[in-house]
Length: 186
Picture 1 (cartoon, rainbow, N blue to C red):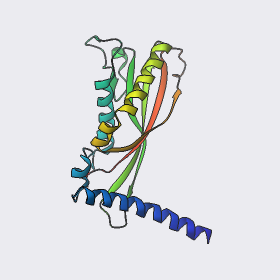
Picture 2 (picture 1 turned 90 degrees about the vertical axis):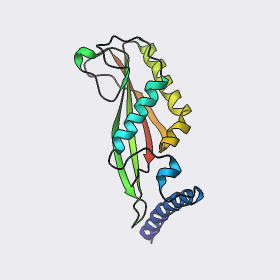
Picture 3 (picture 1 turned 60 degrees about the vertical axis):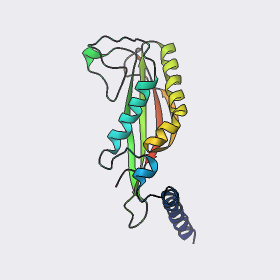
Picture 4 (picture 1 turned 120 degrees about the vertical axis):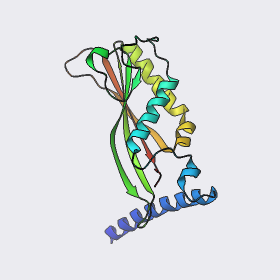
């Protein structure tokens, strides 16, 4: 009896989520989530689109403490760790840590993809590291309407922690973890 209730409850939640999406589509008077949500996340480039959007959001709204950077060095905010000869601290790296998708109904063409991203902040100074971490969190919290307009929903900061590099005292590293979901274009 308890198992049937759990199954019914789980199915009911998915059904309510699907009803919510359909209701949003009807209120916006459109048949596709593309026009309703100003969606920019493609079905075949989900990870790429979300990571690049968050990288660009931070790149455009954070001030590089070492501006101007030497031209032969890696940029301030990037999506992968720089090569050895191009490292110039501080820098920020945005990448996907995990993700999964689920269909919004038995015969539905809409999918919901949940993603967990990590934002690594590296610096030679602990004070600068804390200041940059605060700036990243501030931008993620205050740019929520821009993030939603892009098609990234329910962005949450799920944690941040000091994450020292193996066998090194410097640079210092903090990791901010965020979760969100997207409805990519079918």
